[in-house]
Amino acid sequence: MPRAELLEAVKGAHGIVCMLSDKIDKEVIEAAGPNLKCISTLSVGFNHIDVDECKTRGIKIGNTPGVLTNATADLALSLLLATCRLIPQAVHEAKNGGWGTWKPMWLCGTELAGKTVGIVGMGRIGSAVAKRLRAFEIGRLLYSGRSEKPNAKELQAEFVDVDTLLREADIVVATCALAPETTNIFNADAFKKMKNTAILVNAARGACVDQDALVEALKAGEIKAAGLDVTTPEPLPTDHELFKLPNCVILPHIGSATDECRSIMAVMTAENCVKGISGEDMPAQVC
Ligand SMILES: O=CC(=O)O
Image (cartoon, rainbow, N blue to C red; front, side, top):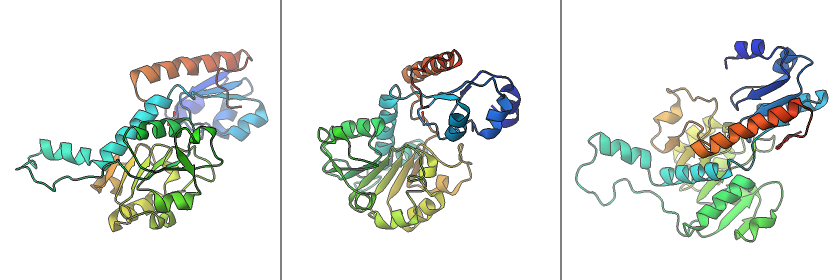
C-alpha cells in the first residue's frame, strides 16, 4: 500500500495487518490513533515495525514464525545451488544462442561435497538449511550468532566467531535476523576476510550487506559470487550495478513464496490480528 494511502487507511484502526514492505513506524502508529491494539505482519521478520514504540503504547505485535521455515530453507538452498552452478547464466545461454558445441570447461561452477559452509544465524531457518546441506555431503559446518545452539551437535555444526567463519567458509549463508549487530555485517572488511573463491548467499535481510562494498568485492574478485533473495531497497532498481554482474544472482524476496506456506501464513496473520484486537494472547506474539 502506498505510504500516503496507508497513513489515511489506518485512522481509527484497532488492528493493522501489514506486509514486510510496509514501514510501521511512529508516524503510522500515531496516524492510527488510540484505538490501535495490535499489528500483525505477514512475515517472520519484524524489523519494519517500531517495536519500542509498540511496547511503550502496549500495542501487541504478531508474526509468522515456524510455518515458513521449510519454504525459506528450500529457497535458500535453491539460491545457493543456482549461484554455485551458474544456473541463471546457463539458462540465458541455452535460450540465447550461446549453446554451441559441448565444451569441457564452459559454465563450470562450484560443487558442495566436502566444502566448508558457514551459517550466520543458526535459528529455525539456519538449522533447516543446515539439515538440507548435510544431504549434499558438505565437509565442515560452521555457524555464528549470539549463542551456541543445543541442536548444533546433531547437525555436526561448530560454533565459531564471525571472523573465523568468514575466513574458513567456502560458502557463507546469512539466515540471521536484522539487528544492530547484523546490520552491514557483510561489509568491505568482511569481504576482505573471505576467500577469493567464496560464495555469499543472503536469505536474511538486505541491510545485512553493505551493497556498495559487495559490488566492489564481486568486481575485484575478492569473493567469487553472491546469491541474494533480499536487497536494499526492494525492489532493487533494474539499472542497479548488481544486476550487471554475471556473478550475482538476484531473486525478488521469495523465501516463503509457496502456495502452501503463504496460505498458512495468511491464516496465522489473521488469527494474530483477531486475537490481538480481542485482547487475548496472539498465537505468535513478538511483544
Ligand atoms: O522475509 C520474510 C519474512 O520475514 O517472512
